[in-house]
Length: 490
Ligand code: GLN
Image (tube, rainbow, N blue to C red):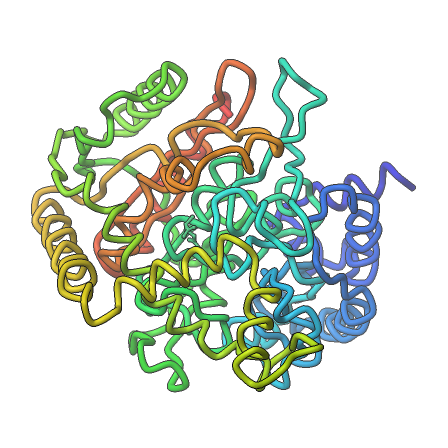
């Protein structure tokens, strides 16, 4: 029995979908296998809320559809949902005490899209509080442990990256087939890099933000974390799409990236931004060089390009993101939602205590920073300046994309670190985790992280492919070719 279950859970999305459609396996048996796997892996703390009963009901319905031969794109596929997508009648916490008991009366558009194509929801995955973090150690519900271990210190618990660490850990541990995630500055791609999974942050506006807890509204994007590039292509095809309920949603036709997939890097001009390749660790240098060789062997031409604004990306992100967060989080005041502090003297005291007790330290830090940079005295010197820098970053990418088709960079600066080390890092060291990813959010352009290799002690390292706005298909094509050619290195 145990072996059978492992076999079922080893199937990726593409294979599982084929076997479900050919009735070789059933949606009910697949879902049961995943429910057991999820419960057996509770030590990872990858889920905040498990929804086995909901999953069983959905699996029954999928089963009937499949029997009739009209399975939809994700019919019977067990998924994890990051706990910042509102799910109707299922608790949604954003990893925060302030929403500990919040049960949304409505469904986010992204999760609705998944339901409409027959996805099965196993539960809500753990995350950094309000998606603020790079390690999934700021969750009110405790840290997530990565299923990945280093070959040299096998007993050491590692972080799965963040903020979508629950989703990444669940995918890497084979306790979901795929998961939703969100990325404001790197939270899909960096955890994908840490856990040896694939994560794509689409063009800003591809996926609707309706029903997604807002962090930095001009930066937030939903995307999938999956085991393979092809799985990601299927997931994003379902998650994305224009939505009138989100004013920033892009009104572009829905695409099926999987059906249109043409894995190839032949004839592509790939830009190597020199600034992103300075002072890399020995491991990362080796892995990136191997990856570039693989791309050359696939027929791509690698050319050096320059993105001089790299050094200004993090500083401007850490003005803009907290500014937007401080405004977005003003709604959690103890009146309309969730947690409210008891034993208060008056209304001001109620606001004060509710927010002091309801939010964790990192969230309060961001609110302070954001409120400060938006204050009358500081607005011009921080917020306005950061917006100018953002424009320049956008322009710089646009210029480079006049000469190359795709840009490659490392996804993260190294492999995963220890769960114990995270809290000891100072805030800026933690922020540096996203040095290669945030500029894409600022420029509203897509990027995908694909496993590229490992450190000497076996920790996954990802490569990031970056394209101009709405170039997701190109990114899937090149990264699928890379993934196929690079199998023995990961
Ligand atoms: N780590 C970054 C931050 O803490 C990005 C988080 C994210 O993408 N949600 O803000």
